[in-house]
Structures are given as C-alpha cells and as structure tokens.
Image (cartoon, rainbow, N blue to C red):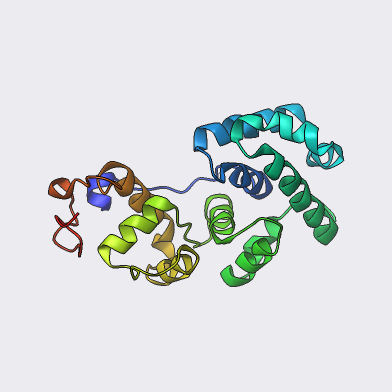
Amino acid sequence: MQQYQGQVTWTPRYDPISELVFTILTQHTSDSNALKAFNNLVGQFPSWQDILDADDEEVAKTIFIGGLSKIKAPRIKSVLKVIKSDTGSFNIDFLSQLTLTEAKNWLKSLPGVGPKTAAVVLAFALNMPAMPVDTHIYRVSKRLGLIGKKTDVDKAHDILEKSVDTNKVFSFHVYLIQHGRTVCKARKPLCNECVLSDKCQSAFKL
C-alpha cells in the first residue's frame, strides 16, 4: 500500500501525557471536536495540576464540545491523580523504557483507559510498535481476513501487532485507516478501485 499512499514518517503529535488526555477526549466523538475540546482545556488551565485542582463541572464545561463531558472530565482528573500519585509528577515518558506489554498494561491500569487509548499514546507519542484499532482498521482487517469475523476489537490489537514487523506497525496503522476511509468504506466499498481486491476474502461480495 506504500506504493499508492506514499511513505509514512512518524513525528510525535504531543508529549505522552498530552496525547493521553487528547485521546480520552476522542472517545465517542470526532477528532475535530476532540481537538477543540483539548485546545479549550489547555487554554483554560495552564497546567495539569490546575485541572486536578478544578471542580469537575468547570472542567466539563471547558470540554463540552467534545461530548460526554460529564464523564470525561472526572475521568481525566482521575487519570492525572493516579499518574501524579504513582510517578510524583505529570510525566509518563518512562513508558518508552518498558517493554510494549509492560507499557500497555500500565496505561490500561488507569481509569477509563482501554487497549485503543493505550495503543494510541504509545504509537503516536513514543513511537512504540503498538497498533491502535479504530472502526476503520477493525472493518478492513476482518474483510481482508487478517482477523476472524468474530474476533473482538480488544483482541484485534494484539493480533494485528504480532502480524506486522515492529518497524512497520505505525505505517500499517496509517495505511489501513486511510484505506478504510477512502476505499474500503462501511457501506458500498469501492472494490473495483481497491489494490488489495485480489487478496481480499470479501471483495465484490458486499
């Protein structure tokens, strides 16, 4: 797919803890609304400690545009509280020194952090070979037969990570998302335009 989509180069989007907070805000909403909520949050509160000290309602009001603000506000505060308690600071760069499994397990121990959120933080902020599985990747992977039709999305993260060379996991993630958005759509996939149609178990059958 590199031939058709071009070379993918990793660059950090945010520092790890900012990536974590941003990714929590992306849960059950669009990236654009999450970005607005994140910008509102860091604009309103100069430091993570300021967020921790603020009332839940004040934080929720600030991130309202991101949706589910009354759930996400206390979740973000709980995550920050645990991080500070465990590390003595608001810095989780140490995750890059752990194995992938150790880093994922540490993140998943935080309130409201599941496999996808953990994988996003590790992949986008620390360039670790974690494979975030969103709705596009999940759909494309099932259609291609990379995962079983009954494989749940949580297990898909580990299966797909292990099926790709570690130095290609990030680009594989980007390629599959783009392919799902533009070609292998949920409805009326463009199989006649798909460069993988000759390898796809579902080609021209949907």
